[in-house]
Image 1 (cartoon, rainbow, N blue to C red):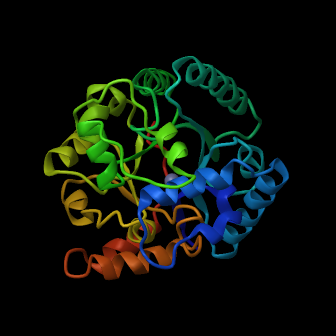
Image 2: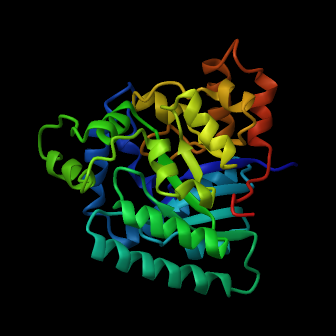
Image 3: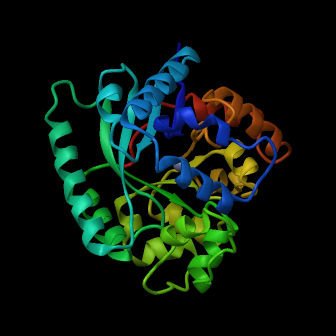
Length: 309
Ligand SMILES: [Zn+2]
């Protein structure tokens, strides 16, 4: 049995499968509902979610994984799970003091994990959530630390049209109801960068840390050039992109530019299961006529190598 890589999950959201849409919905209102549900998720429930998610991954033969943990509770179970890959500690926020405090705590956790006997098959990295949800200094300083220390970095980037619009114009997407304030909290950059997500990350120096860029759907040819020149890898999550109305990632253009591409299911909150083979089958239908089926199958059978290497 060769490797089977699911390069993007949030195992701690396994219990939130009821949030997974059955028909495409707006990503902004979905994000609001997710944030609303996370407010009350207990530690015990989060741990049970991680356990269930890990079991689901192992049941479908997954050997390699890229997981993001907002609570950092995935680290210990994944380090002893026998799975290979990276678990990324998520840090985000616009309040600079709070965000930098959290970054310092993450650095301590990551350094501690690296001392763990047998460290290496499951590494611990940093996730700076997204260009719109992090203070620009957090993105800049966090990425610089990862680059200097050789720590794997992961960022959700260029996922939706709303993200690009927000970074370019500073205009908030229209959301109504109880989740509106949560969405506003997520989106409150001090100054609108006036740039698309990938050039914005490039200008901040973030691409120099070779982040793993998750989704990377809304990109121009120039953006793909920046990603290729920086030697970053991207993760394709086509079912989540479809259900959250994000559009088609130009997989053909990435492969033509020589960008390493992985496939990930994303969490159960936006994916019907954690089986990356089902994700690849969806991708084969989505890119039919543009990318050969076997080239997509190949993407899930490569071992997951953190981009800091
Ligand atoms: Zn994600």
